[in-house]
Length: 196
Length: 389
Image 1: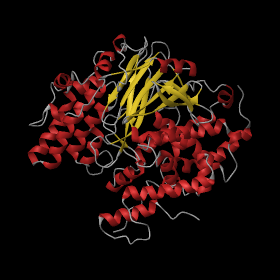
Image 2 (image 1 turned 135 degrees about the vertical axis):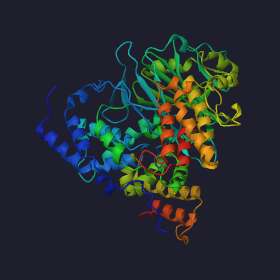
Image 3 (image 1 turned 60 degrees about the vertical axis):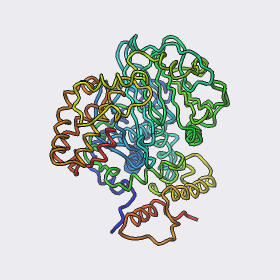
Image 4 (image 1 turned 180 degrees about the horizontal axis):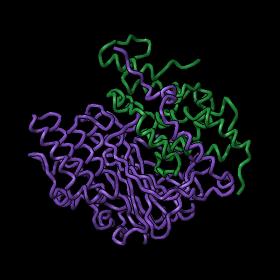
């Protein structure tokens, strides 16, 4: 087995440096515990290291990494929660310092409940749009579907999410201060206007 | 009131996390991983450090998942490597005679009803090889029976859990795993879409006389989703075996009834037939709140020893948490004392080396006493109950 050429290392270091935070953020927003994100990051970049020739150039690099991270997460959720012997220190650091957002706000449970009513793909479409701020064409690339399908499913998913939350259309007034207003505002944030 | 952002954490916040050492170490670890290793031989191990680590976490949760009470987080001792295309992982057993860990994770709605709060249940099974008393027994065939069992010699039941959402049976023979799970029929389209997204369109087949779809994740990793039958549908996943062998396993699945399924499970399984007796046995030495009865124990259907102990302990623990939250100062004090004393409870001590539930339970005492969780936030009883019940 031979050492990878210096150019291979150099390019990987660049990909890692440029996209570590984004991949970690993607993982942190989806795992149960902050330290679990270390496994997702480690496995995702290990795939990138081994398949560097397949990693597309910018600006598509991030989308490719999201697609890999999504599969890593899917395998975890499906039962393949198998850990690599990589990223232990990162996991320990995340356990110590990453905020646990989910339990802090009761509303988040409501979001979780509403999101859970979506299919897993639709849920991911909503999250990619709201959290990773991807356009439908970029979502399509991550999920391996057509841009038309991504746009259509995003639109449908947003409607379903509103229905699940019992929310009025986004043009309605939000009531500040009370629980309802709080939820409405948060929901509207989660459901940004779809790009045309 | 300023609305709280729904974003769990932003990329900007991520960039500010003090994880520099871990970030640098991971990079170096990856750079030391041979590239050709995976490109030419994707089924090899990564030579992981053999270690096992329990992580105590009461009720951590993310935006889409809440860790359920039976969660037991462990780092596996097994050797595992990801497929280069990210489509899955290759599992290799540990050295002969050495135990390894299998962890299962599913998303389920909260069993207590109310909003559909997803939960993650993690099963940890250590078996290499399974003990003789874990071997499954032959189930009588009952046409149209609501229970499914694997009628082939040599398969051990290394995991069994049941609740209102569904039943999950994990069979193991050598390195081969067969996971038989039932889900609510209403979830069927979502599961088909999810599996299709990961494994591509299924191949049409039949399972137990009904139409089904076969999904191929890898040459040794397959799953079948069977069309709903009444209010349930069935998923069978086979890992560590070829498609031919997986199809042979599918042919050995039989439908049976509740009594037949109970007869097929190994000794030590808690069933509807021995539930009350098992609960009384498990409650020995457990300090329960005044008025607590076995009827308050959330233990349904069929469960292995680990799951049963965890659910009985969880029912008691949550009854104490209710007193802590709603009772007098004396009730709060009694609840704290009960959790502190739980280190001597036989049912928790018995399962302490099988998973993380006991350590989670025991961590509650300190939180109640101090009034703060491990991150210094005020104790959130609802969150603790999510973690224990």
